[in-house]
Image 1 (cartoon, rainbow, N blue to C red):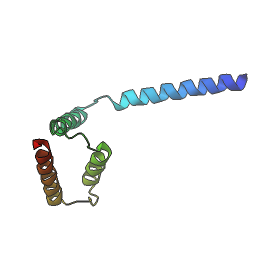
Image 2 (cartoon, rainbow, N blue to C red):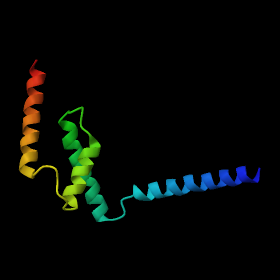
Image 3 (tube, helix red, strand yellow):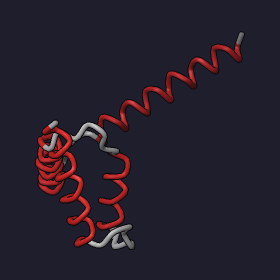
Length: 97
């Protein structure tokens, strides 16, 4: 019985700590946080306006991380622009049908 009570107590503490950390993570604490969040809203709104239903957000995050951390990206900027342009052209053509 003591083990069950102990387990429940530990579980509640973990959930409470996790919730507190999540709340702290979601707060905008300074101007850099606020402008970062604003850039995220602008970026997401632009992507949403493209109306592409099959985007993989994990790959978007991966590319942002690689570029921001100066890692070697899978495409150059020029290749990325060409790929996007070709995809958008293909998408427009498929919607004409």
